[in-house]
Image (cartoon, rainbow, N blue to C red; front, side, top):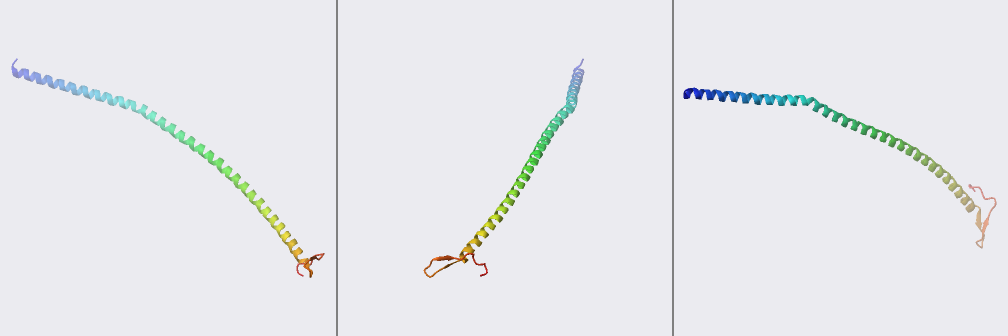
Length: 134
């Protein structure tokens, strides 16, 4: 074999080794892509499950807050009713106290109207007291 033939054979061997190396690399990468593609649905299922769990947690929290809001609203309504009742009682008390005060003023007015002073300054009361228009 001549040098040219040896060089050609070595070049051909190098090309064959390079093609085998490229093919092996391509097969390896295709295997990795296939593995990743096969793993993808499982990973997506896991992600969807974690999303479902998070949504359920949020929904449960929403329901709990809704329940608490309902309870607070009901307690506020009860408090409003209680306050309205207190206001009514206070208004009745104010009316009765006002009437009692007016009666005391009338009695005081009658006492003032039914007395006079004699010449030495002694107080003299008239019985029955005079009418308010006298």
